[in-house]
Image (cartoon, rainbow, N blue to C red):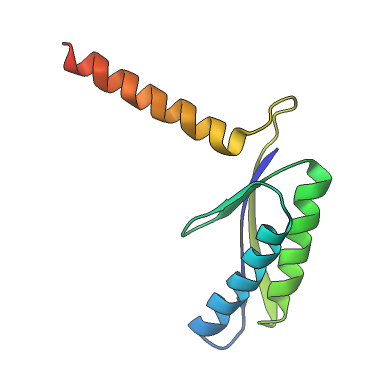
Length: 107
């Protein structure tokens, strides 16, 4: 499964607290050993249900130290029997874009 999540403290003390909290969460994700990718809005992690949600739970607990409450957004792609989708989905998308560009150029 792929899970994109975003976690941050609220009720804390400013932008520095948010950056430090998110850094603490991302450190936990990266230390998990599971395939992951962080962008400006979400961290995506790939693994089994139990693996992924254990990491999200620990990342959320780490963020809790930075504010009086925690906000968490989760989006999951549950597709049994498919591995390496954190890169595979992007590779298929890039191929489709390239194929469309070739088709447009030949018209």
